[in-house]
Image 1 (spheres, rainbow, N blue to C red):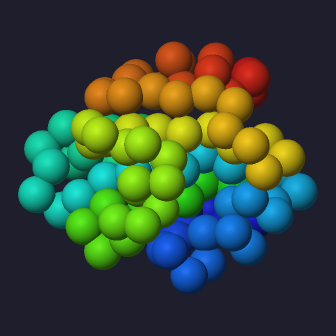
Image 2 (cartoon, helix red, strand yellow):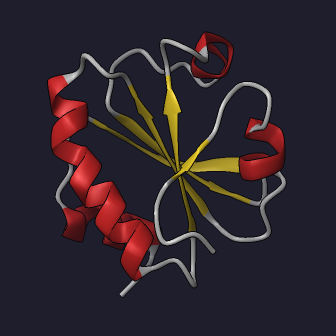
Length: 107
């Protein structure tokens, strides 16, 4: 899998996230969001270190409002974890790497 986060959008969300055969971390973010910029390096590090186990994606909420609305993303950053096409967990706001890794069930 990719060693860096994959950009997803309203058009490919189903294929990249819901139909994935591995767990997926989706970072809902926006360019103007300062906390999003704080969590971005953490998300990128997880993508590099755990690319064999999970898929890491990013979705710009300003450009993809339909998907953000469908999953009730009210604040950003919001990180959703999907398994087998369903939302398994949600983290709103900044989270350190160890918290994200634990939520993902990784070591």
